[in-house]
Image 1 (cartoon, helix red, strand yellow):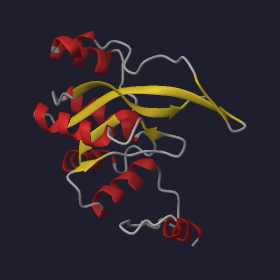
Image 2 (image 1 turned 120 degrees about the vertical axis):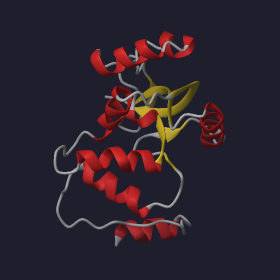
Image 3 (image 1 turned 180 degrees about the horizontal axis):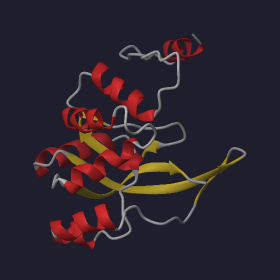
Length: 174
């Protein structure tokens, strides 16, 4: 396929492709990818997005492990790509209210996330694979396209994230 040729040309060796002949939605695609993966942690990234720098993932993973939590989020730098011209843009922070994470006010964090829908940016999430499998399994056959909302269910049930107060992702916006 064109995709495997591209990966081979770029020197990728350790990858798995899951072929869905019919569009099953992002929840099922994500879930099947998680089942095929073998690592303890998962960081999804979409076309147009990139890690902030070469050390981002290792520093973020170290932070998550030291926190004792099962998932984490951090900050993004938003940019637009207009006909190949990339420019940093001002965009709202996700979540907008981070003081509760910085102060450790867990109940307010949960309230903001679940009730006020003050979500972390999906592109800026890192999570234990087994936790994502557990929660996405509940969504299969019920939800088709909102895979990021599994974190709302986690927050509702009291599984709070570690907020890594750093720029982690370049996020294509607009």
